[in-house]
Image 1 (tube, one colour):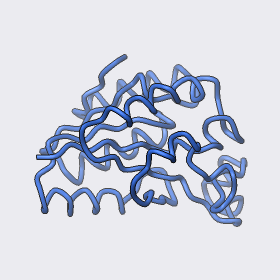
Image 2 (cartoon, rainbow, N blue to C red):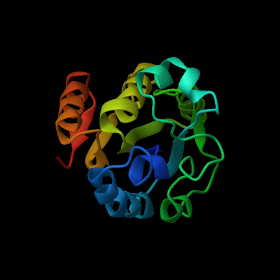
Image 3 (cartoon, one colour):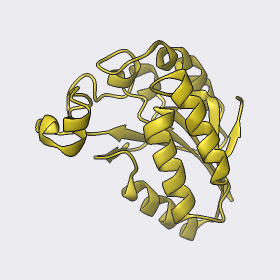
Image 4 (spheres, rainbow, N blue to C red):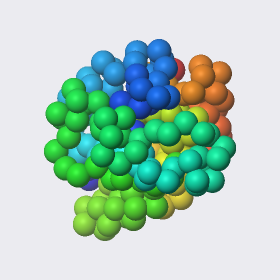
Length: 174
């Protein structure tokens, strides 16, 4: 059995760019250490929008252009990207169906022992992907490392962690 670490959207725009926060910047060293010491396979996701972002439903609700494909903000933070060994899973929305299908295929090839998520933002993309992974692979233990996540606000981070617990996602390092 192999274990998987999913590094969710550790991109410049979410760390110190258009939607960056102090909390996001603070978790970077912990996420880096987690990646460097993780004994299994690491998969990165990347929030990915087009130039038409403002015209999308998300853009109308959150009118802050971010993670536009090819831009500096779309790039995974360089010190973390240097640790990436494969292609990032680009996701056009909060949760990635492509990621779910990829994990199901990996589980067919060799059973997955566990899936751990870290990254940004706890209350949007981390929770969306944790629940999506749980739906695709309900018998594989899913964990979120809270110390390696940050939300839009500290309060929404805590709320998302509590919501994930109710959905049988284990939360560690609170």
